[in-house]
Length: 217
Image 1 (spheres, rainbow, N blue to C red):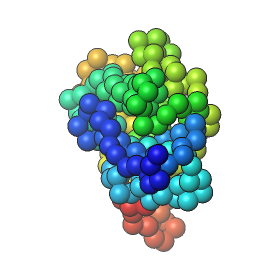
Image 2: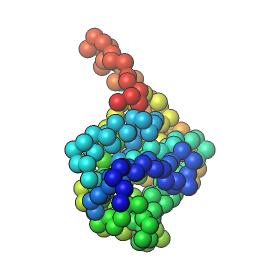
Image 3: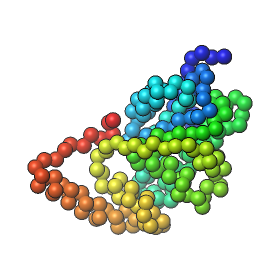
Image 4: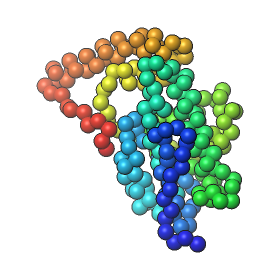
């Protein structure tokens, strides 16, 4: 029996969405899954992964960061297409973590704890609770939902890019079902622009403006 922690990577089938896994010698049946914020890199999320390992050395951990295509897509990508990619990532991750195979490095996982950050993490985990129409097509996600024990919602600062803010709003609104993604984004951009100008005006009146920290944590 191995006496050292096993560190390895599993592929989700989406470029830039590989998960870094750490499994201790005597892993518990509870697994911790961390999903980083938009723009985060594996090295950023690994700090939180290490923190959890220090608090509970027997818990296997999986940390995942998502590429832009899996969070916001682009002006030419519909929200529906972005959500389908998120489902593929989540399904691939769930099927590998919960595989009944005897050589599954995680062993038998009976419960899962999540630590999700900002847009990246929250956009992924929402499919467990707000996408019930499509879930029957993804049995691994259904099983992941059934054994999810708890969720830590976290956040991280980011630069206020208007087109990304527009997509974030459309992802949670009725406009996300609009077939034409260009129309969808241009309809919401004026609203976002007004919000940012109002925010800038208030900060100016208050006598200063804080500089954003980007995706650094």
